[in-house]
Length: 321
Image 1 (cartoon, rainbow, N blue to C red):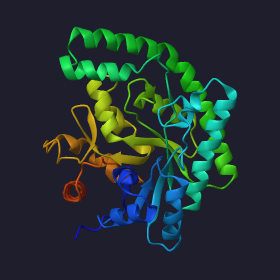
Image 2: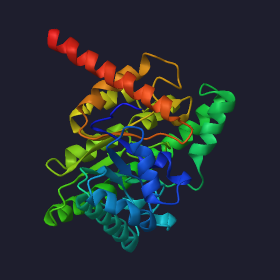
Image 3: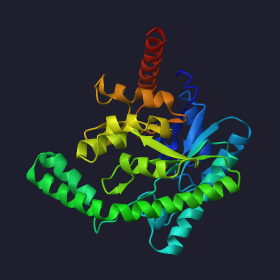
């Protein structure tokens, strides 16, 4: 019997490939002690046929949905796309419509937030994959890595202002329409796992400050932030903690090397570093584990117990301090 995970939620990305029915997928997550789930972007209309009755009966709560939701097969609107930054107006409008559709589902299911991949600076090829290969084979200090990294940074910086502006315009439209329709959900722009994707923490801060008062904040993906820090994109711990007041949700997982979605503390065997993110988890309105299929139920439970015990310890120390 696993511990009751209370206000913590769990992403369906962990077991979606193992199930043919939505009900089976949700039952397995419930057996880990979770009362809530995040429905990720691979959840199809077909899977929802058996999940929706469970929501209606109060058997499972929905903390959040991940755009684009339900699943859209078109790669133009997949998770690794220009999405809200499209220069092509019909495609950008379609991306806005799909995000609003995700918000409508979130509202219908009583979720608090929609996780949003806003866009990217487009490259002719997957330069992130090339960089990660060199990182793995030769290390980040190698001359091959450094020269390709500089090339990526220069191109990213040359185009980022343009795409950031497009993304913000799209988000302003989305937030306005969402509020008009009474959806009452937050949009969380997520820290990403590829170096050419947007936003960096600095870019997220700029968008959020530029849209003060809108139902918009940072969806802080801890493992992605760790990965981008290791690659050299930003100072993850410092910049994330500076944005703590703007976090609307968090994806909890740890990156080992440049491999993400592992159980914090358990897979890295580092019993100190992840502590840097505990205040963000504690303060975040929505807390979601986003773990890979290789994580076992026992590891998930152990990781959760470590996180919650450490947060409780910090809270107690503050009260007595």
